[in-house]
Every structure is written in structure tokens, then in C-alpha cells.
Amino acid sequence: MLNLTLDQLVQITGAEPNTRQEITVRELCALEEAHEGGLCYLTSLEKTDGLKELKAAALIVPEEAKTKELPFSGTLLYSKNPEWAFILLMKYADAQKQKHTSGIHPTAVISPSAKLGAEVSVGAYTVIEDGAVIGEGTVIFPQCYIGKNVTIGKHCYIYPQVVIREECVLKDYVILQAGAKIGSDGFGFTFHDGRHQKIPQIGNVVLGNDVEVQSNSCIDRAKISSTYIGDNTKIDNLVQVGHNVKVGMSSIMCAQVGVAGTTNIGNGVILAGQVGLAGHMTIGDRAQVGAQSGVMTSIPAGQVYFGYPAMPQREAFKQQAMLRKLPELYKEFRAAKKQADELKNLSFLGKLKKLIGF
Image 1 (cartoon, rainbow, N blue to C red):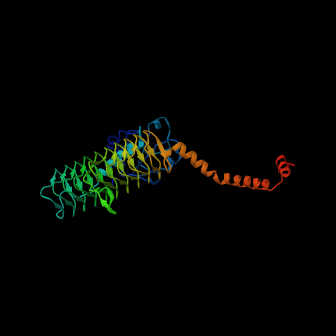
Image 2: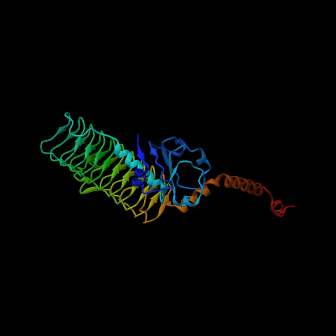
């Protein structure tokens, strides 16, 4: 439970209060669930009628609310971006939680040749192999595996049952949610002598600063060189990234995206849920691909694609609109065909009469 004063709220959010009357905020909550001692936020002033019944202690509102009379009896906090102000409070509340036990658990197995920086925490039954280097302030939760010669930067969070295989590199402030697998062998085989022969995957994976990979996602090591994920890129649950993929900065991959090997993805790209990318292509900077699209060819920078196969969104929507008209068009076709069949069986004179309406 929080115990935030008005001065603390102002200090954390930078918001401007409408009063100096002292309050205490004990909880962050949604508008629909607000109660006494709670704090919530409002991004728009279009619908404010419900504020009269709002029982929260404080409400973060847009700055333009200064010129309006809002029917809210609690403290107002004026902000240029109410949602971000609320997120700052969420960050503060999250930082207050004790999520892990500090220090090295006695059941952890750590190679004598591994190097751990200051204030590193290692949870129960975690294994850290020879030559691994762990940066200061990094937290490794229980039941993780850190392979040989892995490098992990400072202030990373490695949640339970994560596997980071040999030679992989994590830079600073990386977060790996539970069950993420970094550096499994790329899916490389060649058909020789009547069998699928395994191609050794001798590269690694490099995750840039501030990358987050969420639960049960897999990033395969490169056949040679590196599979690379750029700074600030965020990867959702159940995503598959193939070998030798390159991803730029600040891109987003939503749940169940699949990226085949040797694909280059630019900066600021958004791949919505269940998008599939065929291999050996380029997705340009700031491109966006709609949910469940299948991408077969490269996409230019800044373009929005959708569909299967994926195409420019405007073209895809036109095709969808035409498909919805197919039942009506089919009825018209059947009627025209019936009329043509009837004409076919008439004599020339009968056809002429039919056509001119006699």
C-alpha cells in the first residue's frame, strides 16, 4: 500500500495541484474502481459527468481543465500528459516492491571462473557456467541457466526459468521475462544423402540496451555472426525470432509474431499479433504490419501493410470490401446466366422479342 503526500505526488509527476490542502494517496486505481484514498487519471475532458460520484482522493487531468469547472470534490493534478504522470507513479510504486531476495542463494551453482559484479543477486537452483560475466546490480531469479562465456550487462532482470546459452550478450537494463529462451540453435538443416543434416549454429545473440523479451519467446542464435535485437526494442510473449535476424531500435513485436531467418527489421517497426515474416527480406524503418498478416516481400519504410499476403493497407481494405460484395454479385451472376440460358433456347425472333420487351 502506498502512502503518498501531495508534495510527493507533485515531485514524482511534475503535475500542478489545484489546492495545497494535504491529502494521502494509498492506492493507484482505474476510474471505474476508484475509492477513498485512491488516485486515478483522465486523458480527455469529453465525458466528465461521472466525476461527481468519483470517490478518489486525487485525479490527474489535462492542463486545459484549469479553465473548466469539473464536478470532482477531491484534489486535481494538472498535467500535460496525465497518462504519463500516472505511469511515473506506477514506476514509483513498482520500485517500492521487494521482488527478490538479495545476494547469492546457497543452492545456486556458479562456476569459479564466472565474474559477478557488485550487488548481483542469484536465485535458488540457478546455474552460471564458466566464463560468464554478470554486470553490477543485475538480478537473476531462481531456476535460470546462464551458459558459458555469456555476458550480461548491469541492472538487468532475468526472471525464473530463463535460458541464455553460450556466448550470448545482453547489454544494460535488459529484462527477460519468465521462460524466455535466448540463443537456442537456429533452425538450420541441409538435405544431403537422403537426410536432413544439421548445420552447426556457431553464432550468438546480442540484445541491446533496454530490450525486453517477454515470457516463452525464443530468439535463435545465428548460423554465423549474430542475431541482433536493437536498443529499446520490445518483444511480446510467444514470439519466434529466427537465426541471423537483425532488428533495429525501438521496434515492437506483439504476441505470436514469427520472423524467419536472415530478415532485417528497421527502427520503430510495429508487427502486430500473429504476423509472419518470410525470410531474407527487409522491413523498412517505421513500417507497420496489421495483425495476422503474412509478409512475403520486403516493405518500404513508413508503409502500413495488412492481409495475406500482406499488401498496402488501402489496397487490402479495398479487396476486403469487394469480397463482402461477392454474395450479392453471385446472385446477379446467377440471374444473368438464367436469362442467357432462356435466350439460348429461343428462336431468333423469340430472342428479339425478349430483348425489346414484347
